[in-house]
Every structure is written in C-alpha cells, then in structure tokens.
Amino acid sequence: MLNSYSRLLETTLKQYQIGCAKPIELGSSDLFHQILQTQIKSRLSLTEQALISQGGNTRDQAVIAARRGQFATAQQLFAEAHAPLESNLLSREARLLYESFLEQSESYLDYRLENFDQVRIRIDNALAIDTILEEEYGYGILHIHRIQLLHNIVRTYARQMWLDCAVELASQLLAYLQGVLEELPFSGSWSSEQIARQSPEVVAATFTQISCEIAIILAGKKRQIARYLLTIAHYYVQLQANSKSQDDQQAYAWFIIKQAFVDNNIATFLEKASQFLALGRTQTFLLWYAIVVDIVTLCDEIKLPEAKLLRQKITKDAVKWEYLPQRFLPLMTLKSAK
Image (cartoon, rainbow, N blue to C red; front, side, top):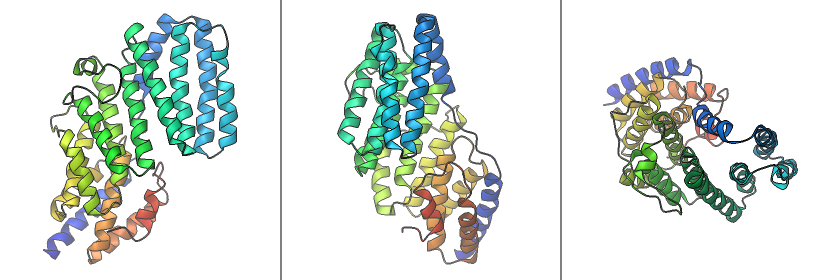
C-alpha cells in the first residue's frame, strides 16, 4: 500500500508542477456587466449614464479602501458616492439601479467592520430593489445579481462562523442554478424559468463562484467537520458530469475530490487531485488552492519521503502565489490541521 502511495505522490508532484507553471486567468464578470450595460445604454439618458459611471468609480474606490482596512477613507468615499442620489438628474429607474449596487458595496464595509445586522439590512434592500427593476423595468440580468447578493450572505455567515448555515445557503443557490431547486427562501420571485432565461455562460460562472466559496469554507477543516458540511452540500447539489462549461466541470470535480479526501480514500483523492492540478490555476484558482491545502494535510499525515518532498515544494511555492486567500497560506506553510 505504501509503495502505491509513493507512486501516486510522485505523479501528484509532477502534475502539480505542470499546473503550477500555468498562469492564472482571472475569471471575469464581464459578460454579466456587458449585458447590464447594454440595457442601461438603451434605456437611460447620457446624463444619467455619466452620473452613474462617475458615482460608480467613487464607490469602487471606497470598496478598495475597505478591502485595505482604510475604513475612515472608505466611509468618506461612500458618503461622496451618495451624491448622484441627492441630485434631481436621475429617473426612478436610474436611481434604483445606482442604489442597488451602492447598497451592495456599502454592505462590504459593514462586513469588514463586522456589523453583520447592517449587512443583512443592506442586502435585503438591494434584493427588493432588484426585484422591482427585474419585474417593472425588464432587467432580467439582475436575477443573477440577486443570487450574487445572496452569495454575500453566505460570506457573512462564514465570517460569523455559522458554517452550516453558510454551506446550506450556498448549496441551495447551486441547486437553484442547476434548476433542481425551484425557489429560494427569500422574498421576491424565484423560478427555474427565470434561470433558464439567463445566459448559460453567466449561470456557469456564478455556479463556479459559489462552489469556490464552499471550497474556501471547508479548506483546512478537520475531516469530521468537513464531511458533515459536505453532506449538507450533497443534499442539494447534483453532480453533473455532462456540464458543457470547463469551469463548471472543475467545480463538479472539486466536490468529488473533496469527498474522497474527507472519506480518507487516499488513492482516489491523489489520482483525481493530480489530474485537477495539472489543469493549472486558470479561472478556478480558488478550487486549485483548496485542493492543495488538502494535499498538504495528507502529506503531513503520510510518513513517506515523497510526501515530504511534495510538501516542501508547495511550502516554497505558496508564498509567491497571487490571489491566495489570506487564511490559506498558514495552512500550506505551517503544520496543517488534521
């Protein structure tokens, strides 16, 4: 058995090195924004478009400041970003559009400040606004924005360490995107028909983003806890190997790989993990990183020279990786949780 593990670990190292050499391809929400901007340009005046764009730039600067921990600066910029709402130059439609994304952005500052009640208030406001825009003004693409807003609630639950709530909501969102779950337990209209009207590419990208969130939540957790949380996910999510999207396929693959890990099925885990790693970080780099965290944990458990060598290689590389979640680095460079 140890000899077979040695060979699998050698293969994993080779596949890891192949994948590690491939550059990250930043996944983008370009298509979502392209669809939204096309509709905005066809409906709003040039003056309204200019005000929304200028205010949006200020809003984005505020989010960057909040991300950097510059909270006073973020608050000041958000105050400035309210200026378009205080003007008389926006129609009701334009005001609602601007307010929805402003509420979402300000909820991030509240999230960083751990003002979680206010996060939920802002998200609920944005959800209600999006429903109006979707139903009264025909902004069907904002159905996806509503799912993105609920994704922010998943992140908030995780930050509060309500991990079962976070994974359950994330899994419900995935099942809804799959058409398996007909409705979501939030106000507003929800149906499989509304999902069917969305761009398949946008739906696939959203599915992958939420799968990455589950991967982040489970990364580094003890097997018993991860197994319990994964059971919640599998209650809702159907693994579809026939997905046409490469990113979607990798999201489904991650679920299978993670299941093998929590079940301590070492051979299956290493075989499938090495195949995944060879594909590179590409647009699903968060899933790639999450698998590497599990590989490091396994290397700490298996007392084999090949495991030690693989672990050393990962530890050396990890400090240079871009877009690595902050809490992942200690898991890769220090003694991992078992």
